[in-house]
Image 1 (cartoon, rainbow, N blue to C red):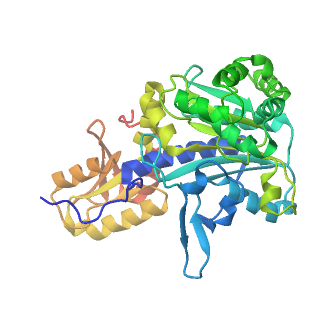
Image 2: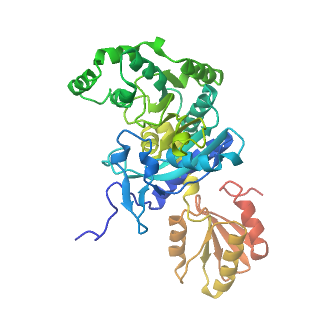
Image 3: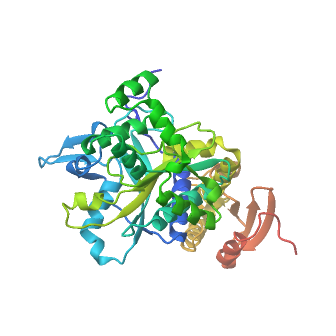
Length: 431
């Protein structure tokens, strides 16, 4: 049999109900952590002027854009990341807000790259930023939120590590070894790929800067090259009880050219997949985007939905936590009204409406059906209770579907009875 004529494009996803529920679990966890850490939510457009991303991105990003000309002749791009949009938005509106700005967004992004584990062409990101604070306390606050997000997903110390570096340390290295200022971005891109580049290719590329892989690796291995900013961040996080989640790793430089100082990435301890999250300081981006009109130091990070979901599913104690949430939040309804006597359909519809208005998720058979089939429908939609409306109306029966027990009630007090019952365990009530 031939398949459907149309399917989702490569790297794009359909969110059928369970997939949508998993996405909602990620979103609700991210949103909860951000709010309890004092961040407020904003939102920026999915479509932006292409020049926003070409202004100062660097790396591979410019070759991965979903870029086109719109019907007005504008050169536009589906956003590949959110930081540039935030810089534009902050430059325009920051004067209306006290500093620092502690903002977050959960947004959809698009990059034309090879779909693989942990990476698609369409994805969602949790973006968290602090703008208007230049000191390492802001970097530590940001990293602490990344750690809290991981803990909220059920991970524990030993499951993941935050690897922290500082681009300023590498700029000092470059200056000490005669790398010209114009060539520093290309040099940093090489350092960013040091763990992935073929040894002979890496050696050849570094030779253009009169450097060798051994010189670069020796710098990475020497903890004495840690910046004062890293030392302050480590002390801050240790005071919070989070020092065990952080380590110095000078091989981290991040691929985007707008980073200016401290950078970090969150990895699973087994290093079985790409970074779960990453970010850093970008003190000049707002000024660059605003052509110098606004100078606002900033630091931020992003966590994508692909990798964090993969890591949750591969970590038993985190997966159990997600599955428990899904069981509580994926039922189509809480109460299914079983119409055992079609002569009572009008009364049943009235009950359905009253329950829904009382905030109870309620469903019922749209057409006449045998009672056993209605109970099957109730179980398929995940209902806790089946409210049976039959010839005995206004007397009602409440079936607890998890254990097949039964209780009796009356239509006159059905709403109070059921709203109260939903707050109690599923077992039969004791007299």
